[in-house]
Image 1 (spheres, rainbow, N blue to C red):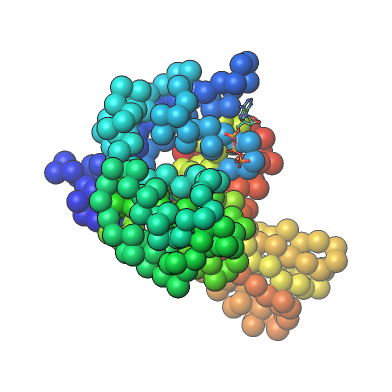
Image 2: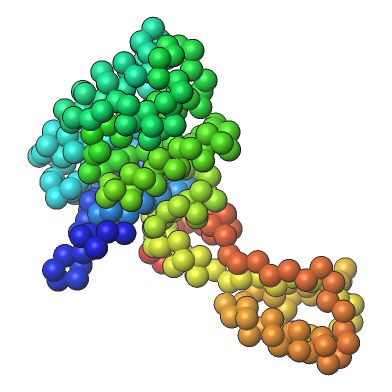
Length: 310
Ligand SMILES: Nc1ncnc2c1ncn2[C@@H]1O[C@H](COP(=O)(O)OP(=O)(O)OP(=O)(O)O)[C@@H](O)[C@H]1O
């Protein structure tokens, strides 16, 4: 992250500051007192199951919907009062965008990008989005993955200060995903704050500086990937004779499978291996796995109600 995102008082400058945001559809509360902060210069992933409230929250943060309660500041501006000024510094990649099929890729980037009010070179965007080879192809002839990269090129036009990406890699093949992530990382490295939603948790784990997990309209986990993962234990698994008395606390099943959940895998593994060596106990299929976002995500869904630390 760029050091310029820290104030002279050592605090993080905020690209987005949401306090107590509530959004209703008639009597249904889709976003329920949401507190969310995104720091300048970071790549922030908003996660959650279908219907968790991510799109509603992001649309409200972008000023497309009026909140039923709470306050939203975007790039230091109150979105309710200064939407035009705030959004003129933002790029938005929606889940679907309509294009004129007969225009070429370069024409489309140039025309739609210019609507942002920012200047840029369309060829730079085509390079960023991995579309140089498709420059003169008509948009109607693009594949789904190429269209998604076109969405990205248009949203990134003029290097916005803040870029919203709604499920940017959904339905892309691995090569197209890699190309899009490379472009996203270049934007972040150049100082753009990125806020994205995704259902690909491994991508959030790999690329995001911080993540938030939404459930039933509220944030149930928020922090750096390491912080969020650190709230869940690592797991040591192996198979051993069911009659074996183990040196560490474990869940041993009658079929011989053993699970050890631990926040100190190094110490527990060392104790286990030392003991196994001394007692000549075979530990078959021994594996150690760190916590994954997917497990945390599933935990919060199983819990049903928002309870976890934020
Ligand atoms: N126009 C609407 N009218 C009534 N209810 C709505 C409307 N739009 C969304 N909802 C409801 O609000 C809740 C949150 O929806 P939202 O689209 O914000 O979730 P999401 O987290 O973005 O889901 P997804 O991952 O599927 O995009 C859901 O229960 C949804 O059914």
